[in-house]
Image (cartoon, rainbow, N blue to C red; front, side, top):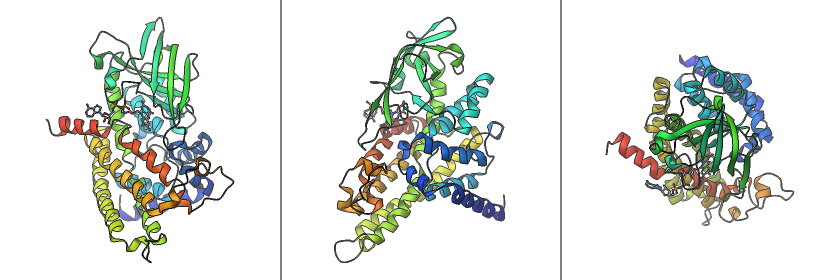
Length: 396
Ligand SMILES: Cc1cc2nc3c(=O)[nH]c(=O)nc-3n(C[C@H](O)[C@H](O)[C@H](O)COP(=O)(O)OP(=O)(O)OC[C@H]3O[C@@H](n4cnc5c(N)ncnc54)[C@H](O)[C@@H]3O)c2cc1C
């Protein structure tokens, strides 16, 4: 694609954002995973109608067929504008598993509803005691006629209270080696015996849940691929998940916001924070890391285009991407100082009748920084990613 086409593409993206990203939607977007389903769907459906919902999918399944550069232009533009995130559980996680390993019936049933955003998914991998050591999971699925009967518990299940379906890892062979006895099963959240209990996290919000399964009958037709081969599909999904967690475009937005904040906030010595060499040096160092990260991200996207999956670079991307995010969130708290202290979840959700005590950008600073600590844990902790790199990349 030549330069004029890219310029036209970029202006089409800007037009789309100007038309569809209303101020109330941009405000709701700042809640991240905490966005209401109605607001999340509003943005998802607008992007879907435009035909842009699944840039990384093959075109035969609804992908855009964009070049690497177009993908970057699109994700940068939407992130810089503060658009809501597209929930990753359908588009980035179970969708690629379905078109890569699912049956034709499963593809026909689920892919259109993932694309149009009418069905929301959540991820049932982790269990109490089986997080990093995921292969030790115990939730059991026992075949009974045309069904599996599922018993057990998942934990830290983001959005389970908003989701229609959950993709789970279940144990179908208790005798085999841990990785060999796992299957990948899709479960309708409305099935009798599925119970969701909330977990409120350190940001004061409810994104997380425990999900309990008590004698839940799941049609065997909901099994992805072969029984006991679930670990293969699970790892494929995790690589896609990790690549997304780096969230490079979001960090670019944070850098831009911090540059604006540094002009607005006092440094305590009669100048603004922009005059503080210590603050600006840390911001500049992080921005340099972010530029390097963008180059790594381009390699990961190229690998998806060539092989259908991100390579082991996804682990590197996740480690550095989450470190950059965490540094930027801490810098925001440092920049807004005392204004970050009041912790009012009504204000953060935009549901308070009282005005914020300080500038708008201070309201969620502490809450975002605290929840941001989780990014180096979910999707496989950064320590585990270092183990992956040691083994798969360095051959240690
Ligand atoms: C906000 C949030 C959202 C999440 N959403 C989901 C979700 O939607 N679905 C889902 O299935 N899961 C989800 N998770 C769970 C997440 O995947 C797990 O928390 C993660 O895999 C770590 O597992 P754990 O919490 O059991 O910690 P543990 O495995 O107990 O680890 C504790 C600590 O020990 C370290 N450690 C463990 N083993 C090793 C080792 N071999 N080498 C070096 N260090 C090690 C870890 O790095 C960590 O620091 C979420 C978690 C969070 C925090």
